[in-house]
Length: 443
Ligand SMILES: Cc1ncc(COP(=O)(O)O)c(C=O)c1O
Image (cartoon, rainbow, N blue to C red; front, side):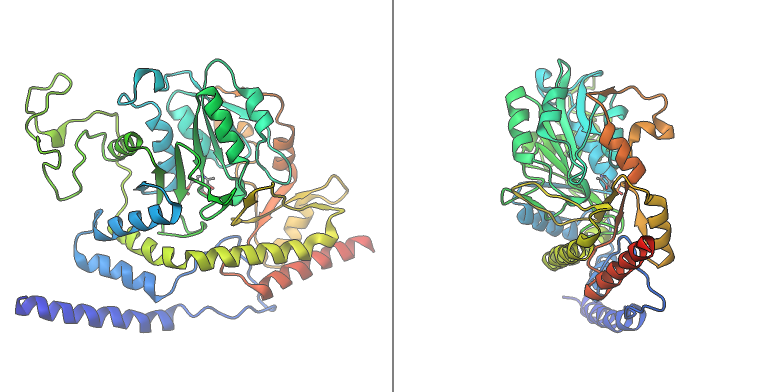
């Protein structure tokens, strides 16, 4: 080691040590106060470790996918028990890649989705679960969801299968697993692909297995609202080597070459390929087999993610604890409120706590405005009924059956936070506000 390297290593130690002091001064979490209560619907939890890791990645001077990216991918793969993790710059990029991968020319002709093919999904959800279907020239087929679970039943999915159906793409709504074992079986019976949108469901399980491990591919988001965060960020995961290759190509400009950043000639025949109408030996680094994007993330994001992954078990535990406490606190209002429900076999790490107003004189608007006035922030179940969104006006789709519950969700459902920034005191406060609201109503 040169003298310069030795000195820079010492300086780095010094810098990283100072970050701990900085964190302590800059990010002291204020104690919960009933005088100025704030209950956000979501929120990230981090300590000096995330800052240290991010600065460490900056000081490397590498910045694109590097050592932190490799470590994060390996750790997430091991947590899920899957072979391949393809990180992206957002969950929406992950869903775009997963659907686009089904149309890849690298797939055998019969297995490749073509324009006009159908993908079964739901309209009560986040737009970027559905948008990639449209963006790829495919047709979304919407089925209704159940109230309480906010997921589609296997029967509804079965009834929606038509001649052009080629895949099912569903989110585990707000972290609550749909019957993914049965849907997997149904897909196998009909030769359909299954993609799980686990953007809100990292760590939820079904039949004792992590969600994200049932589908041909699954997607995750690491936006701050989610179970772990990297700022912006996401991933597609799969066990299938061909999908991994296609996903990476689509993510990395559509290139045919699979060298890691900073590497050349991983295939051993960089100047030996004859592809498309290019001349023999055209540099493989500049051969493109897909109409690609650039959806890669950075090593700084991966470094933060690595610190977050260590905390994930504690995050999941806190989410479950908060959810259980909130369920207990709101049980006495079940005349007015439909509380969240799970199905047999599932163990959700809930993203939020969904509530549907039962048909009564009490309106969602009144309760939501009251809660917001008490510092309890509320959110809709994302797009409500996506087919009623302004951007859907000129989009083609098919509906199987009727979207009755989806419309009810649009009118009567909202959710509140149970994320790990919150604890018993905050849950008790939320419970007391609900009591206050319904007590005033009864008198
Ligand atoms: C179910 C679902 N899918 C996809 C996304 C998109 O993730 P991102 O915000 O990282 O693009 C979200 C975002 O919250 C989501 O809830």
